[in-house]
Image (tube, rainbow, N blue to C red; front, side, top):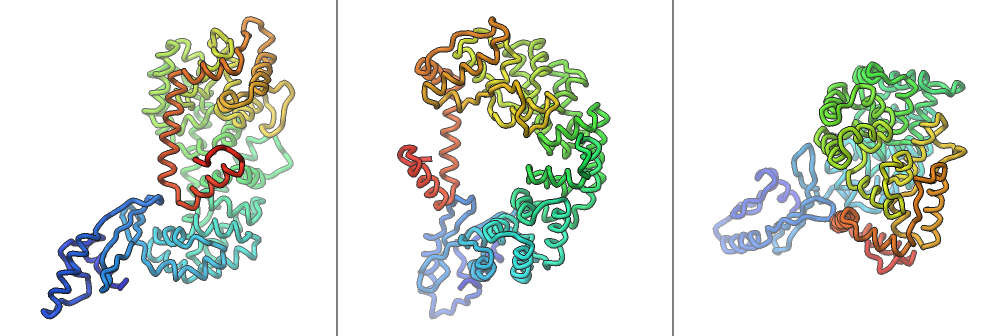
Length: 491
């Protein structure tokens, strides 16, 4: 039966022809009536539907008894292909060895691989799993690795997986930490070797780091332990990476500044000179920014380089429309991160500060950083600006406040947040106003158009996410919320 389905899909380019009989079957005259009945059932059963996994399910009549067989479709190299019903059964021994319970998810992941790599997973998967367990990868992490990066299991254990794991472990990562790099960035498994990228990044880190008792490779390992996604840098060739590094240095960043920026956003090193030149031109056109300002933006807010030209132009134009060109230019010079923050976030920040009693937030631009979207990132940025390690608490550190902090806490906690902010700004009494009560603040905050738009967007995002989540994850989220007493259990 399944062979007939596969043949029909191949013959029709992945689509059933409504009037065609099931593939591989000859229609004798004596079966004409039965064939007609099957065709009618086929027309009725042809109903494509979208699943929560963003795959497509086609119900087709393929069995003699008139029952339907559902086939899931996945994208492979830009084309929609069916997940063979036999694939999950063939992967069962490998799934058991790695502790994978969701066979359907594993089958979809493997079906998205090119055919030679699918066969390689069947041929070498068990030996690769045993090899990685021998290195020290625990079974729970091994299961996540298999589902996220099945291609790693499609070569002999002494080949791709063995080479790449040994190179990561040479940097000081444990086997489990190396596995996290592949889980976070599965594309790196397509590399034959990481050596070219390591040869570029290690000297850069050694030259740009104040720590003198660690080698460049050890420093690279430290970076990957804290930011496993940074392993995506390792899939770039030496020539490409070196070109990007040289361009950033030629723009005016020192090696130490480049390393500091890399620790905040490793993706900065993946941006080619042409892209950075276009973004610099946008800032020059919209704000009149010079080269030095652009260098400061890259140094303090490297993720700005990940914006598209259209997004960066929109951000700059919004600042100019709100504050004027001269003031917007000054703001970017002082708080470069504002270019990498969505417009609605800083507009909401201004509104919150006004509700906290600061009549003119622009007058306290230096204190505006207290209200941030990501406290951890802001705290690390402040420490680095002071020339201190980003992970070490520093004396005189400001108490950052997130929008979440001011939206939901109890009155006593909210009052403490406002008092902390006022204490930090108390050096200039003109910058401090009397904050409202929590009830007044909360009521006023919810009336702000920016706040209402934010929550409307958040509600739409939650609704979309609920449609996309697999049922088991949706149930897990509901159960978790109920156990915390967070209401009815809706996400």
